[in-house]
Image (cartoon, rainbow, N blue to C red; front, side):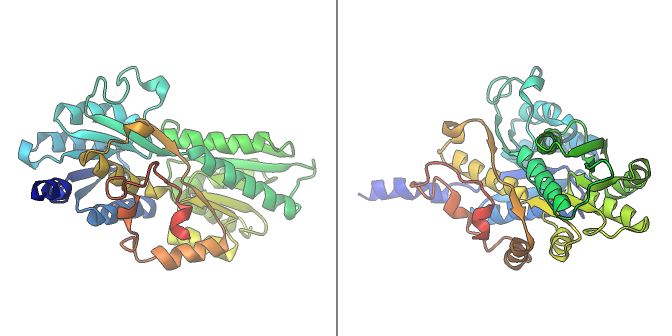
Length: 359
């Protein structure tokens, strides 16, 4: 009987798993800082060690960080690494880390099927590539564009030709999440015959670049009153530009964004920002839960090695207020243990929807 009890409690006493997150964002960038904080909260809840390394939006630095990890003495290397495929760095990150014996998980942006000639599938060429988890990025582009168009219709913002004119400020050309957000936006436009998408530009996720682009877009397309942006910082840049030109956001021009920064929530509540999708920062925390389960003998492979799940919430003023009240000080109040299949055998399928955390 004692032997059976020891076997039952054994998973509680195995050595804590060590995880490193190579964060592609800046160490003062709201989205990527929030992503890291949620991961750290999940790791604390599950008794895991986590290290966060910021690449500061330098994709070459991302590769350097992977090389630094691989060069550590074997005993000092993490057991697992969570990385992203921002700016198509995923294949090189896999090559470096797999060669060093570090098991790797791709979160936020994985490698598109058509780009896997150099990598193969998870657990094949690179045995330590465990799998991937991506938020269904099309959702963000689609729901924000829909909300933007609906508000412009309510405000009777049609030009003399009877059309609503839109410009889009996207992130980059290669990161899968950027490509898919743009595809969602394009789908919403295609479903709206009264909308003209004048031009899509790429601002590299940066506020200052978006501000510069919005200035000349406003001059080139004076009828454009809808500004769709792939993240919150680019939306703010476009708002800065239009304000400088004498327009009032939310009245003379309408803006949408993605992410859950405090500034974005405040702008949404004030009505200056028309549409906001977010919550997908939680992808990293869910990845930590999946790695925990994998390390404790409950492989997520039964759900698939490449998971693409709905995570985005379409925020309004009320849900923005709930979010700030609940998570304004961090995520240690979330019991991430309840989402583990190891700790909760009744959980048969992971639920990654962010809205559940708001309820």
